[in-house]
Length: 327
Image 1 (cartoon, helix red, strand yellow):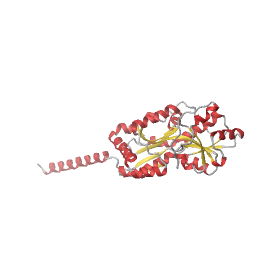
Image 2 (tube, one colour):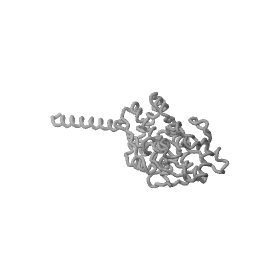
Image 3 (cartoon, rainbow, N blue to C red):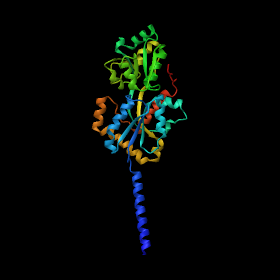
Image 4 (cartoon, rainbow, N blue to C red):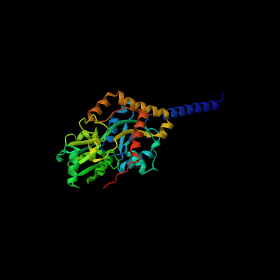
């Protein structure tokens, strides 16, 4: 073989080896930082849930995780930012329903429900309404009596326009014919801070998330079919309001991690790696479990199939509900 041919075959071999190494590197997942987009401001339930995962998921995947808050406009800003990203498994959305259902109704051209594939629902949190202890109220009936006696005096902090607590709180007042001042905030954290500071009379949110107000608040009722473990002595709303001839749907925050369905279909191996990582995190990582329990953050494992069922149940409740407006 001539020297020229030897050089040619040598270079061809190097090229093929380099190409195969590039293909291997491209398929190695994850090989860079994973980004979690939180469609709300700081301090709310989904933000706290995302940061618990940010802290411990790197132990399993071997790469760093970045949490980025994109709050505002009822989740529209965060959703748009998520949808702009490549469907490669390096961007995860943290959001909740009914916010997603309401947003999809308002912006039907932005996305379809089928565009989201759910890794897991980490936290199902029934909605609880709470009043400041300074009111002296001890029950929902006390609240109704006080508001009817002095319309417009009392206020309610809105934890983003389309959060479960915001929707159900406004529905509570409307169906009972109560004149309550609605004060908007950008997250559950800021809405709760407002009540803690005495800036508003009432707020509503996930029963687990509302435990942080236990020292300053009085729970009035829960939008669930039965009492919840976090507040075993708090009655279901519908038991209390039956005398007023009104009824409310059972409602809770369905807090989830999701990716684009396009990613799941294009990279099934990466999808499996990501789902398996979340399974190990929620079920096997002792540090993660202890942190969530101490911080009162949900850490349930449903998996993609059951998570989808839970989401669709919530979607079915809220897809036709009249959307409340800011006042």
